[in-house]
Image (tube, rainbow, N blue to C red; front, side, top):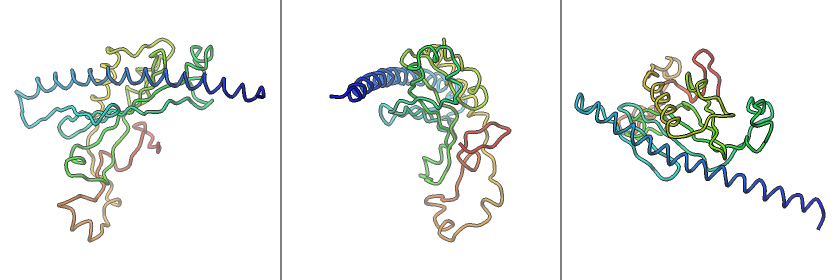
Length: 229
């Protein structure tokens, strides 16, 4: 066999093992996240329920990769991707000494956080939009950083030394939920909804087909700049 083929085998083994390590850590982190979500849900429920039973706070899961935290009119989805990712050469992560010393540290699992309207699920409104609130990147050493909206975009960026333990997960969850609660449902622009089909109107009571979302469009954006993600 050629030296090239030997190199291919070595590279495959090295990278495959690395990705398995990252995936295992990401699964452990997601399990810890679910525990944190359970604690947060119980605490919110115990606080809110005696005051107003109409305000529901519930946690559900569809499997090992997805959990739903419903807070009255908002549903926050925590979704663990099953693949492992690296970053483009232009990404700021490569300027970190922790990564430049060992490029393998740049390989991360990702947990995405989405915000949808609870009614989108309740009434099966498949045309409704959700929003990415943030995404958590974690590597084989449980070092992490977060990309996201408002405070999520700058509070958790010490990738070289920050470790994703339960305390850090609790902080991320609280920051995400605070943003979701403060992010209000706004009326869509008139020119986006001024034309509808007869079919849309006839089916409104069964399955609302007019797109609804906190903002019309699925975006990952700063508050000042509306940039498509």
